[in-house]
Length: 207
Image (tube, rainbow, N blue to C red):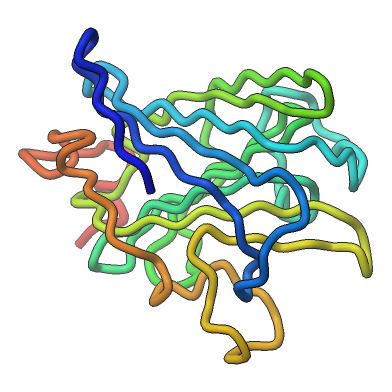
């Protein structure tokens, strides 16, 4: 992770590069890049720059709309986790579809297909995706992060991870192995996620 501070606009940016497969091998293409920065303390701007493989083909859903099981297509995913195993999963597709899920406990979806404004463009086989994640979508006190990318079909399916699992420990990819997520300083990025945080979206899922 790289942290940049822009003195002119006083904005902290966190930059991540997905350079490994899910099990720790080096990727064989230009890596996926992710940038996070606060958006007026009301949310978090997520920007993706990634190779466009166009494999699999586009989902049948309309661009700009949620699409179920988007993980079966070409996507970049970001996960925001707290110490109570409450987490936000965001999936972005280069064809314009998205999928936002709230999970409480490993792989336990409590809400899905939340609305999101997501813009994407493709230039020279590179896709650029940008969205602002509302503050209310994050569970309170986010402390860990991981990010993933998927592309390819059938035997050419490729799974990549910012923080991969230990080599040789597993035979199949699973992006919900939360023990491999790493520390993320959400408090400095969006202070209000830690201070007097109250989410109308999460309130019904938190005891």
